[in-house]
Length: 79
Length: 79
Image (cartoon, rainbow over all chains, first blue to last red):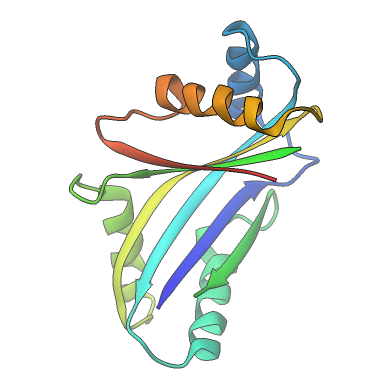
């Protein structure tokens, strides 16, 4: 099994890294860029087993220390 | 239009951040974790327009400065 986790700053939170990427893309001649958000991506390879139990475990891990729920959102997918 | 870019270290490249997350998860009592890879996630909001042209532009940007093609792979999706 493989779990994919995406952690992004909440929309209301300042994202200086995203702003920098946006400015750079514009300077490099890319037009039509309205916003850039930069986040983290985690890919976790899991031993095969109960998918729902794994989701529950990882959901807790995401909430407790893989993301900061005050300023970040996360999206968890298990496949 | 929205572009999603995932940049991950190549499998052959040492991923100390991933290793640290793996160790931490194990210490926190999560079992069955075989590997963790940590990468970057970028979400780019684009003005509506030619999807293929946008893909080509962003593909070049990914290759030139959003990733380091020597040690990183990237995956680009436009929706």
